[in-house]
Length: 223
Image (cartoon, rainbow, N blue to C red):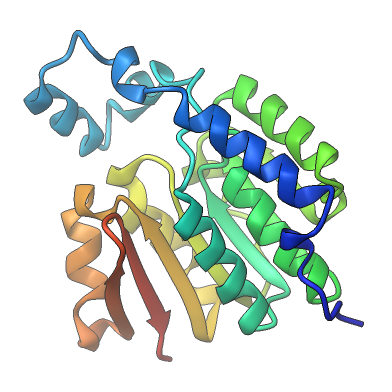
């Protein structure tokens, strides 16, 4: 039975997540790519062939969602009574904690998350263990084009895209047939994936979409 109290706002999870956000705020991903021009960074972020090298430079960076986006993820998953969630791009697991907390409060479920950096998988697993939510999460280490190409739930309630931006259309291709009508798709920093935005913003493709805050595109699967 679902809990009447949000685990996201209660101890020990609330102060733990707060500390992780403080740590994330203290790091700057730009430091890891300071030798690259803005043009080169943008090119690499949108490359479908060089993303491993680019994000490899950021392997020690949390690359966390914002506090507002974390709260949004929890609210969407909780409000839709989600039981199955797929996440592309685990990083240190801050978004994963919010989604898993919603599953816990919904009475349980399965969260599949994919991350290609082994050190980040280890950090995320430690954080989910510390948050008491590890039992709800299935970690898939490796390139998501392979790890999310098999054994997905028949019906997916929410998809989070927060990995290599150039791959957003390809990851959506892998999961789209499993998205139930009414499923949410949340894409962080979607402005770096114009092909993805063109797709979800076209009503003929089966989505209703709008921007959330400064860096998120929120879409709902219509059919």
